[in-house]
Structures are given as C-alpha cells and as structure tokens.
Length: 276
Length: 315
Image (cartoon, rainbow over all chains, first blue to last red; front, side, top):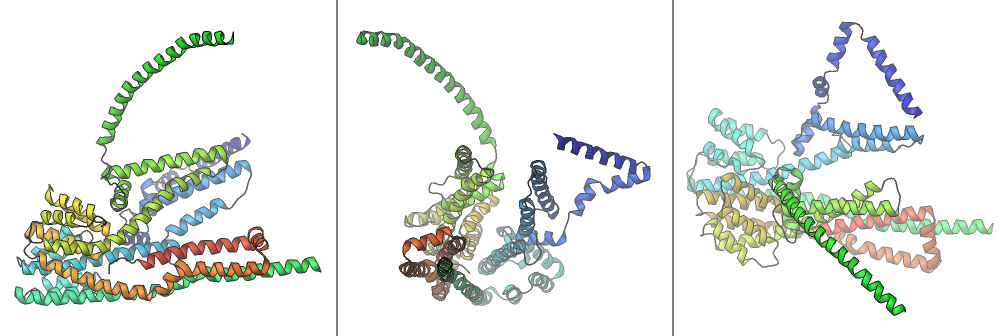
C-alpha cells in the first residue's frame, strides 16, 4: 500500500511539473507536436530492418514489427520490475530476457537475429531459383506449342509463379516499352551474383528471334546445362556443410573424454586430501 | 432383526433412489435439449468463420497435409489447436496442484504446445523427404497417362501409386482440384499447395507443366515429364555422392558416439568401480555439468546424423 501511495505521489509531482513547464502556450504546442502519435510511430521505422524483413519474406512493416517488439519489452520490464520493486527481490532475469528478445530479432551482423534473417533469405532465394528453372521450361513449352511473343507469354504465365510473379509482369511491361535487350538487362541486374540468372537472360535473348524448331533444340540443351549448374551448387553446399557436421558430431566423444579425465583427476585429488 | 432393518432400509431407500433417478433423467433431458440448442448455435457460429484467413490455421494445415494420419482440410488443424490448448491447460492444472512453482505456466505452454508442435514438425520433415523421392514414381506413372486430360491422368496415377507412397492422397487432392476448379486462381492455389508440401524444384516444375498443359493442351506434356524424370535421376546420383561424402558424420552421429561413450565409461568404471563412478557423475558439480553437456550434444549429433542420412531429392 505504501508503495502505491509513493507511486501516486511521484506521478502527481511529475504531472504538476509538466503542467508548470508547459504553462507557456508556445512550449506546450511544441511538446504536443513532439508527442504526436504518428510522428512517434514514424520514428520506429528502420530501413535495414525493413530490408531484412522483406528479404526474409515477411510482409509485416518494420514500423509495426518494432512497435510489437517494444510492447513486449515494455510489458516484461513493467511486470517484472514492478513485482521486484514491491517484493524487494532483485534479479537479472528481466534484463536478460530483454537482451534475448533484442538479440533474436535484430538484423545487426553477428547476432542470432541476423543469422535467422540470412537463413530465411537464402531459403527464399532457393525458392526463387526453383521458379527460374521452371520459367525456362515453360518458355520451351511455349516455343513448342503456340510460340507466343515474350511479353505476351510472360503476362500469360506470370500468375503461375508465387515468388517471381510481380517481377515477370514488370519484365513483360519493360519488353513492350523498352525493347527486349534493355528489359533483359534490367532483369539480370535484379540478381547480382546469381549462379544462373544471367545465363537465363542470355538464353532468352538468343532464342527469342530463332525459328521454333531450332529454339527448342537449343533450349533443351541449355536446360540440361542449368540442371548441371544447380546440381554442382548442391554438391558444393553439402561438401562445405559436411566438414562442419563432422566436427559437431564428434563433440560428444570429445566431451566424454574430457569428462572421464576430469572425474579421475577429481577423484585422485579428493583421495589425496583425505590422506594428507 | 438386522435382516428386517436392512429390508426397511431398502424400502426407504428405494423411493429416494427413484426420485434421484427421475430428477437426473429430467435434468438430462433438459440438458440435452439445451445442449442441442447451444451446440447448434455454436456450430453455426463456428462454421461461418473463414478459418483459412488465419495464418496459423493455414500454416498448420500445410504441415498436416503430409503429417496427419487422417487428414481433413481445415478440421485437422483446428483439432490440433484444440488439443494443444487442452494439453496446456491439463499440464498447468497438474503442475498447479502438485508442484506449486512460479513459472509453471511457462512450463505448461512449453510442454503442452511445444512438444506436439515439434513432433508435428519432425513428422512433416520426414514425410517431406520421403515425398521428394516418391515424386519420381509419380512422374514415371504420370508419363504413362500423359495423353489423357490432366485430371484423369492424375487420378489414374493416384490409383496406380502403391499404398506406401506418401503422395497418394496429395495427388488425389490435386486431381480433384484439376477436375473441379471454379477459377484459374483456385486451381493455382491448390497446385501451389501441392508444390509447397513437397517443396522441391521438381515439384514446382511438375505443377507448372501441369497447369500449362491444362491451359494449352497436353500435347507436349510427355516430353517435359521425360525431361523432369531425367533431371531427377541425375540429381539422385549427386545426392548419393553427397551421402557417401557425409558417411563419417552420419556414422559418428548415429552409433560411433554411443560406442565411444559406452567403452569409456566401462573402462573408467572398471578402474574406479561403478558406484564411485556414478557418485562422481551425479554428486560433483563438474560431473553433472559435463554429463549434461555430453547428453545434449549426443542428442543433437543423433538428429544431425539422421538429417544427413536422408537428404531431400532437390537442388
């Protein structure tokens, strides 16, 4: 009860202080402008977080995500610190939990959050790669069948694609507006350091004006090449993983060695203490 | 006298029991009437909710599509949610009555929600790996029926698949989607669902080819199926090579660690006797922490070994 009165008194004093400080109309106006909810919410926006979130495939805005994070942290702090203030116990738990939340959700490098975001980004890139491979196959089907022009074909198939759909529609618009070469250049520039996106661009450039029968033969060959590139990437990825996995999987044996040595030493020292 | 007393007691008790029985009957009838009405209202309200609008239900439904034994479109996801809620409540009640601890609610949530979800995830991952191999069989069978309309071909394929195949039901569902879609968007959604449950390049390719064939005729479907089949077989070789490369890690994770631990503890125990060994492990601080570390890393190594021994058939 005493604490509640103390809190009430402190709150009342703070309220009175603000009232007195903002007696001047100019200052009050400035304060209210500062405290505008929209302005405050805009300050929560963070470009790097927004980029990390959208790369990882979340459709949530950075502002909302930050607000959510902040709310959780504030509730933890208020409940835990309030209860520890009332009961008089001190613990580092709430601060540790706040640190943990920050550590798992921030896009800053060398944190757990960064690791999660990069993993999700890689996963999304792999899903996009799948659709790129499927695109070249569909293009070949088109050459076999109706032989539509590239922009018409792209518009027709764009909504078959879950991740590439918007980019394909943009590409089709660019093909009609800027011409084939510029559009393909734009499309390739979307994927810097990609193993085969540039390859796909050149394939489309090369085959667009060929007669269908030649184009089909060429495309078949190139699809095999892309399959081989992807297979090579797979092997490379797993080979780098296998060394790490062997190391991780050897840890229990090493830990057991260490345990046995430590126990024997402990035993010997305790016997020594008994003897001397 | 005792006998007479018993009879009198019996005669007195009989109307009482009858009264209680009658009142229970009446109450039961009333309850049933009301419960029917309540059930009707509840059901009407529950059925009007569009469950697919919720991300959680969609996510669970996607997992259940492969993992559930008797899958029903949205129902199994809702059932899983209810089960988790009840399990968390039950664990919380048990903890609250037997172990009065401050953080029992957190433990209840971890036990009641975390463990079922983890089991679901593991089942889904295992069946997903199996599905990526079964896809090869699907494609081979499908190329036999490629001259037919897409939905008929899919239906025939599903009928011809062996019962052990994980993809039997998903292919059947896909066939239904192809035979009775109302709009292209609907078809696409179902097809994406099929592709994302398997989650490999080949599944995406297959689905795209099927949609394309549905729109522009299945004249060239056979050829592209042949191509996908070739790609799958090529990739299977690559996967086998990778598995050979990972043999060390797999063996370590699955049995070498266990053997090393057994031999080491046996030899140490023969040197110190078993009772001192156990006392050293359980009663000293260093023994407890290190043995916990050994157990934890052993479990992780086992899971890593298992994952490595069955890689997905994908790029």
